[in-house]
Length: 152
Image (cartoon, rainbow, N blue to C red):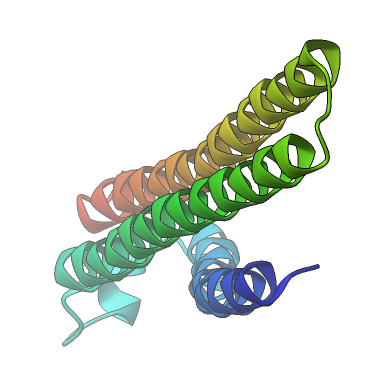
């Protein structure tokens, strides 16, 4: 694992750990709310809707930061790959590698580029998936609160 990838993994991991802590807390609240007949009476003085909005805002910001971080990592990986290609091509020409050898290097470049692009999509989709799951949890909690606050 390269230095850039290590830093990315660390940064993304920290964001994900923070998001996981928020989700864990909200899951506990969900369990707690599910056992109450009168949710509103138990959260008096707490603006539940605003608290959920703020949690959602924080998780969205962390998720957006993670997506941006993944994009920056992608750009760095593309740059490194292009530099490796340039070095291999220059070395091959110095060594008088034939056209077939140069073509192999170009094929490697294309495959590497495809792999890097796929990694970007996989990472980005994982972040979007986690955000959708979180938003579903928040909506569920809003519904539970609204139902409990209205006395139903």
